Image 1: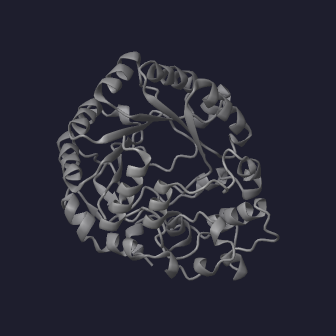
Image 2: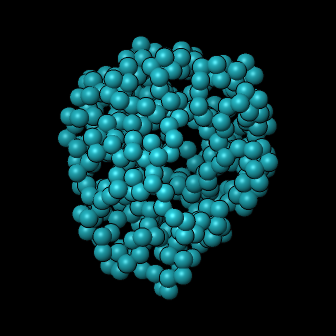
Length: 379
């Protein structure tokens, strides 16, 4: 992998030239777990074939993609996954896998190493088997996941634990961190729980309120002090992302198992389908993709005047999904920004949305119009 200073320059150049540096590719929505917070429809509505995916991978390589993440659903449910992986490595992608690891055996771990997979991100919801298994709805999944994790470690594969935080496991986050430390792996804990792709908001009942997240937000490991000097690569990236909401549509994108291309997995705005057009036609020619690129931070009417903007981590995809517009505020982000500002010592922090008397708790938000969401446009 490129060194950090080189990476900073690479990211800056990819954004300036809009080449697709990072691609998140879900090769299936089918899964052998039924996690309570999952936003996917696990039925197969016509996944791309082996040949179709190989063609798309070749188009991505030609367009300049370097970092490729294979995800799902559960990637190992595809009978052709190792064939696809071998093809991706032949095209010299830097490959990361996201998996629940239930189907990783000693032999498969060895093959992943042989094929040159750089990193495997494994979902683990608790250090308590009962809590983890209750979330996945698969008895014994905790032990099977840990066993597979160790198979990967034996092969020298880089492993990262991913632990989404929700009401079911908020009390176990310290133990997950301790388990990751004991195993010698990195970890990520994320409180992002989204509506389902079919428009259902049932999953949001599991989302943690800002007050419930305070112990995590206050932890210096997850919320380090901003006193460290900015490194060169950090400065390069800061300049690269200046005045744009995020990387979605600029140098990163998401592809569904059915060939739909989105700016991001959390931005359900279909910009074209790879069964109908080439990747280059969609990436550079889609009016919807260009509309996403045209959005500037300085154009966000409410956000640009927010008194606590520097404490906010607004996601344009969630703003679109939950609040109806790519350029509008995100009620969830406003809530979390107020919590973060309060932790930082700001007395009575008021977000831009609250200042206008429009902040409501996200659990009581207006229903998200995710069914046929492409018809909404990009207001």
